[in-house]
Length: 279
Image (cartoon, rainbow, N blue to C red; front, side):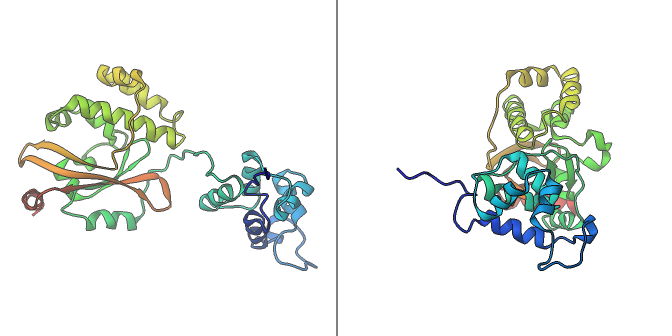
């Protein structure tokens, strides 16, 4: 039986071509290397190897599609040496190992004006952007009508789980609060692990456990829930009465740490009710 080749072993390796292209785009002088008398633009192979703290021979083999698949540690060093962006680093791992790198959590909940304009354009459909730790980073006017005005809360309190477990309005709005709460905690646990934020959420979880015995009980159960992707959500609105929404979650382009949540009213009548409050 023929030996199965890794992505880095294939003839005319895409990994090798990508590495050659990336190093050709770097300025040697800006990185402290002599810039004169170079036959080709960019860094030399040995210079990339020096910056990555790996053997020049091993790096040369990678560009030539020889030597087997590199380790994740080596790819991380090369990504740093080539000054790759997060998207370029992910592409490097996909070429070298056939999988994306492990998640690296970054505590950055800011959104661009472009994303805020997307939210505003969705009115009167309630929509918000949440982080992997379920902090609400941005929202539109319709979401303040249907859910809560996150702008009225201090930034450290703009968290969906905190609202669900500590705000009486959240409990009153749910037809089956227990089921909603259990699902939310399980889905939150998955999102946090996927984002590599288990350590970062430690203080938040401890504080919420102290404030809510119900959250502590559900958190200790260690249940996990897959994202519903699309589901129907029913709530009791204090002014509009019963409302039903198709609940959808979308990844935000180039921001793996953010998700766009959209609540699409299932009937024209419900949509008109929200639009009337926005009026």
